[in-house]
Length: 107
Image 1 (cartoon, helix red, strand yellow):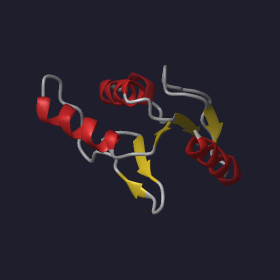
Image 2 (cartoon, rainbow, N blue to C red):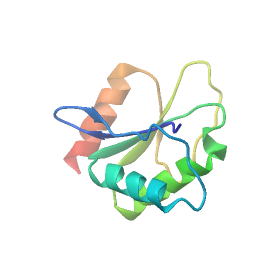
Image 3 (cartoon, helix red, strand yellow):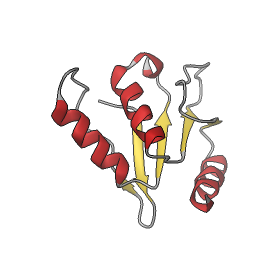
């Protein structure tokens, strides 16, 4: 499963895929592309191996191709693990997450 949450705000809808990336699976890529296209913002939750996950890399590429606002959330007690090209990393603090979502929606 992916650590990426694509959301459509008002109401907030979690469009994250609930299945692991399968290389050479066109149906997975089509689903990911559709879910991201429905999203207003893409949020990457940084996990231990998120930066090494090929599905996350594909989703980030799709989000950037669609010019979706994208940022990363770093949970407490995590040192690093940011994903290249996935935007600014912010700490898991609700006020900062809310401010970043508001900032993304203004674009």
